[in-house]
Amino acid sequence: MRPKVYISAKVSDEVKAYLDQYCDCEMWQDQEKAITGQQLAEKIGDVEGLLAAGNAISERLLSAAQKLRAVSNISVGYNHNDLEAMKKRNIIGTHTPYVLDDTVADLALALMLAAARRVTELHNLVRTGGWQRGIGEQLFGMDVHHAKLGIIGMGRIGEKIAKRAKFGFDMEVSYYNRSRKVEVEEQLGVNYIPLNDLLEQSDFIVLMTPLTPETKHLIGAEQFNRMKRSAIFINVSRGETVDEAALIEALSSKRIFGAGLDVYEKEPVSADNPLLQLDNVVTLPHIGSATKKTRDDMAMVAARNLVDALYGREPQYVIPELKK
Image (cartoon, rainbow, N blue to C red):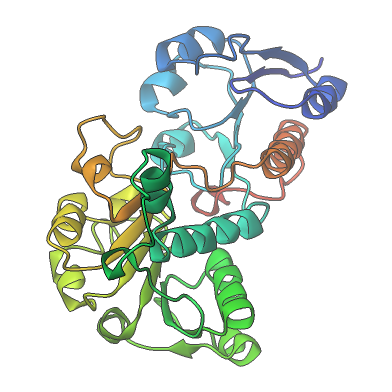
């Protein structure tokens, strides 16, 4: 008997066809609205596999799915999964690392360039009729080429960012990580330095750490106070790695030059968030992997993970904490 699967997000016809080969599938049909937790709980009472994108896999949800054997996330991050509850029920959990590395690295460089050259601010100036003559020094930006880049968290995406910065923009790249990566240093010509030195010396600081209890609010008032006044801060990791109130203060007081953000402490960002009133920050709606090709590739990896799990094979990308 074929396992029953629920697909809680929109996927390509190719991904759906792949799953249909091996499973009896039902998919959330209202593509204009994301499925709520309550709606998902009502749908998965008798399913064995769940293909999910950003849904909270909670104790409450799992208690409604007594037959569930596997949850496959169309994402790299899995902090929305209650891993202890999954362990207790012996549920396999998978994710999709590697697939989006290049795409997220591209976005980090885009934010660096946009914040440094004040792209969104000057775009608005032109669109609102404020460009009447050549701009003055008060609207000058910062050079990216040959500047000093500090990367906090030298994982796979950090390495991709370093490669682009080093060989594309001739930047001097340093990094801080919980462990040194000598091979990366040799391959890319980057330097490992202590966190405080990185904060004090870098023109651009890119935060790429995963969200863990140790990294929550890793960057706060103390860290912003160590940065150059000309520094630009980029976050494409997780919003809660930064004390957002401290970031707002650093930007509004011009303690740092600017920021580029794809993630926030609370998402979606509320309309009254002070970040949205500041000219020296570029804000994006958490689009790190949001290109069609990358999202389709992620969904296919997730589908393969799910089929492998349901058919008793070891999935390629089991969540590390759930590996046996």
